[in-house]
Length: 132
Image (cartoon, rainbow, N blue to C red; front, side, top):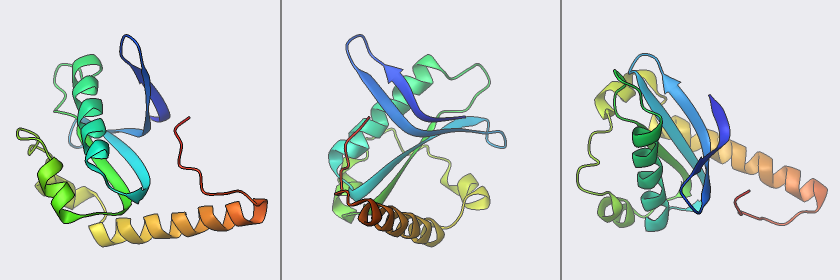
């Protein structure tokens, strides 16, 4: 549905990397791409995006919004302790049927990262992970 979709509070603009609508599950799927290691701030940011999207965009008959963080690496403890209670409803059993495996996503992210790095090397750019 969108790439770098802006979602705003009263004083700040935020940008969701990718927004999809899954017609099988009848829910929005928000994806945030992180090239580095996952942090608890990333998890909190995605939680905010999901809550805002549910409040501002989810329609009657839609299931709760799903947030997916794709990152270069993760610390299992950060993941375990950063997930808020009440956020367990992520439809994991349904998504195993329609999404690629974790390994396939990891390999695709790795391929994309290598391609970005190669492109930046050709252009002589550094690694800048800033938001728009």
